[in-house]
Length: 230
Image 1: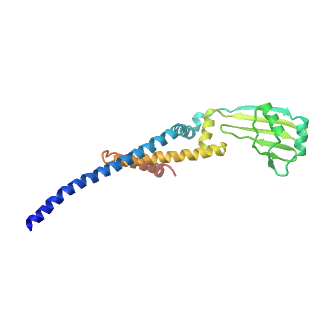
Image 2: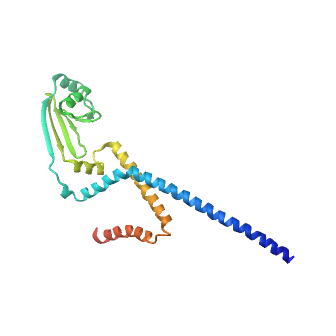
Image 3: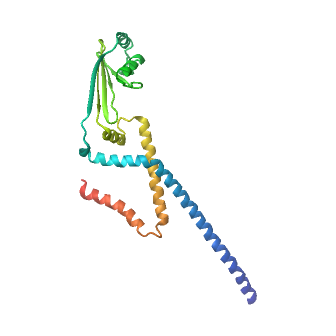
């Protein structure tokens, strides 16, 4: 009886020895596949967001030190006379609501004269004038058409390349498409940061400095806020 029990134990031991390494191998294979996926998402998100991340980093510095980068705006102004048929069209088709586009012929005339693109831009209509505000990144512009004589005057200002990039950073006067891009860029940066954190977690066993450095990235700005920002 004792001999038979010993034989059973002896037979079970090799079976257990064979099972344990195969479990470890499967676990390591799963971890390697997981790490490979993290690296894929990490480098793809970093590649997509790299140029925009550089631009937003640089403009973060220029915005935080605006006094270093002040530029005198270049201002252009001018006057003109809207042709009589177009004036009559404005008077005839004056909209009931306060804000509406200029007629197509008037938009085309303004574009040919000074290069303003007015398609899709709502003008402010009143009893004695039509006023078009045209703010844009890095500058401003406006155009006024007097009624009923059709006298036109405009002004256009440009604050330079740094102001243009700063306004892109803030999404100021950039329209909905750029706003959507900023949202997508933010999501790409989140993917980049989260996958980077998960990769750090997997390597933290062999690199003891990982979590102290991550903690420092949280503690340092917190201390600065508590001590210097009121």
